Image (cartoon, rainbow over all chains, first blue to last red; front, side, top):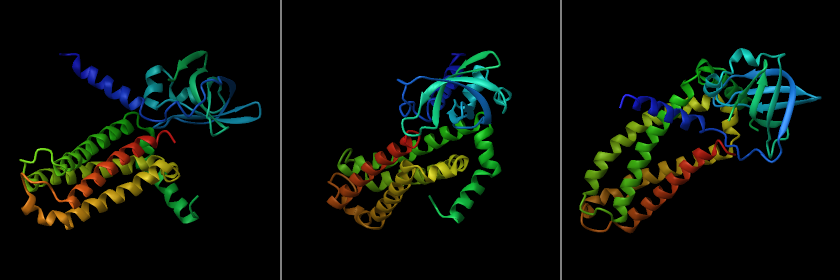
Length: 114
Length: 164
């Protein structure tokens, strides 16, 4: 009984967290492993993003909702421009510059974003 | 896509304090989303329950009494749905107007509103003669079929905004 409010909050979180972009528009058969420098970052709803410069290409990396990033321990400060990060993710099927991040390694910690 | 004045307005919307809060506050966006869903559950639920009555289910329930019960709640729900929808729109206004599912959703919403208005201004005026225990006229059932199809399509489009 006493736990039910937490279950409800958890359920709402699960619903809202999953309720934005689907993963289907990204090709999970092509795993990308990109190390680059953050040019610009948005810790924003419904998805965070990072512009990542790597080997002459600037990727738009679509991240998780900020509430999830915060829960997993990825803070706004971790995404400062100039920081070198490694992103594992999948390319967008239609937009060659865009990828969706499965996980990110920054400041020697790896955070799952799915 | 749109002309410069339209773009300027969209940019101004995106740069508003409200839009910034929608993007930046940790729990605002999901909370607004939940309210939007609660609102349209009431609106669409009421519309579909009314449509089913027009199709002939629960004929013992007087149509006019049912309308008197459901219509005010539908209107009240709009007071939640429209502001929360605009709040989500503000966060990424430019992306929304370029989103085909969103544009189709708004178009279908206009059709649904027109369908409902035409029903109330038209065939519903004679509801006293088919209030209960008889089949609703064909015209009323056609409005109900349109309403049912449109609302399901509108919900589908709303969900697809995130996938196209």
